[in-house]
Amino acid sequence: MKNFNLKSFCKINLTLNVIKKLNNGYHSIQSLVTFCGIHDNISIQKNSQFKKDSILFTGKFKNGINKNDNTITKLLYFLRKKRLLKEKYFKITVKKNIPHGSGLGGGSSNAATILNFLNYYMSLKINKKELYKIAAQIGSDTPINLYKKNTLITGVKDKFFRFNRRLGLNILIVYPNIICSTKKIFLTNKNFSKLKKKFNYNKIKKREFISFLIRSNNDLEAAVIGFYPKIRKIIDLIKSQNGCYFSRISGSGSACIGIFSNKRSAIYTQKLIKLKFPKYWCVVSKTI
Image (cartoon, rainbow, N blue to C red):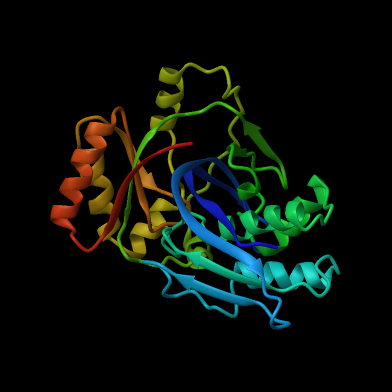
């Protein structure tokens, strides 16, 4: 197998509502998820010289990732446990352009991207249903990342609704160099919502869709701000700018997002953020 280069895209939670706490300690959530152009770069090839995997993380956000215990090592271990990979080992290099612990799903996306790649190029013949089951063993967000389509997490166990419409949203992402513990945020969350009725995302007019997003929220935001008050300042600053529809955290934080009516306003706000918070990671992208 020659060297392959893969793109592992960034996940964005446009909305997130916590419905209830489950008996297993996890939570049922309803969330509208999209993806943007920011991505990690993954290089993968067979490691024929040694009977072990070589996994290397490089890039701006390599720090804080355990090279021996991460979503990729978990995936490879699980596939071998299921006797799907047998004696095949790999050399994998991941250039981390997506911040770790930011609520942008970088680790889940890495695992899902490699799982899809191995299933296709190694002819593992894993069907779609089994693919989802394997992904769910790696992390709760990994099944969502198997397909880079807009996705509604319905709040009903293992039920996703994918829709093909390209949203084309101008998005600003600000990462304040805080690694959020998803478990800690969910444990301290006190905001719960009722299950909202699903509507046809493929047919709704853009103006109505934006209006729906503006009225929506992220239930975990209060818990995140409780730990890290500076995040409120970022959200309020983004929200106050011309052309900004709304601003909130993605996932369980700490990344803050702003959705803008035009790219120029998003870039202007990016420059403002960089002036006020020069050490923060701040990018403008578009949903895919």
